[in-house]
Amino acid sequence: QVQLVESGGGLVQAGGSLRLSCAASRSIVNFNVMGWYRQAPGKQRELVAIIISGGRPNYGDSVKGRFTISRDNLKNTVDLQMNSLKPEDTAVYYCYGRLQYDYWGQGTQVTVSS
Figure 1 (cartoon, rainbow, N blue to C red):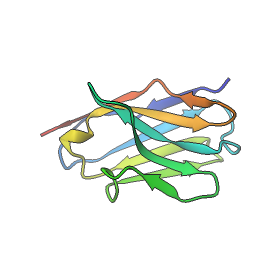
Figure 2 (cartoon, helix red, strand yellow):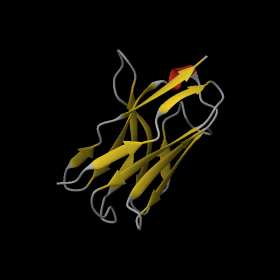
Figure 3 (cartoon, rainbow, N blue to C red):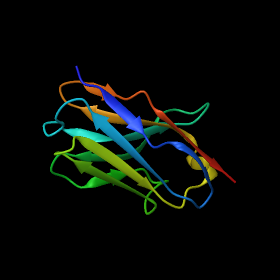
């Protein structure tokens, strides 16, 4: 069993920055995919950013150029640096990992005020 625990969410003004971190309860070196998704009220969960093992990061169109994902296989963490935040970035952000199964964190709230 793998646990993913997010931290770093909160309230920020538009144009500000936040850094989310996801800590895994075991080594992530063999995880095929690590990343972040988000879900806003009344909307479906959507891709924010993922890193496929040995590959480049992939970003959702709405966050390209503003968000940066990083993965540290030694620390077993996946971070999401979010800059130039907009009110439409308001959502619950979920950490995601894929091994043999899909694993999800419990989510962390990000609220961007206008």
